Amino acid sequence: MADRKRWFIIYTGVYYQIKILKYMPKRKYGPKTQTKMKKVMHEFKEGTLKSGRSGKKVKSRKQAVAIGLSEARKVGGKVPKKRKAK
Picture (cartoon, helix red, strand yellow):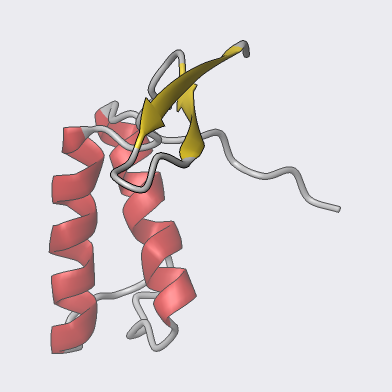
């Protein structure tokens, strides 16, 4: 990505250099995903979020996030790809 440089003068007369990115970074998560995550995290905080097959109550925040992302993928929301197992 090419950087462009812009110079401007401050009252003291000293030059400062600012890097301006040519493109804005893309969003990682779409609006569908955000609403799904909001709902899942609300359930987690209330204590009503259950895991998939076993139906046990979710106690880990990381697990709640994983459930929310997988549900968002099923709905078709914009979510980054799953990490590969090591």
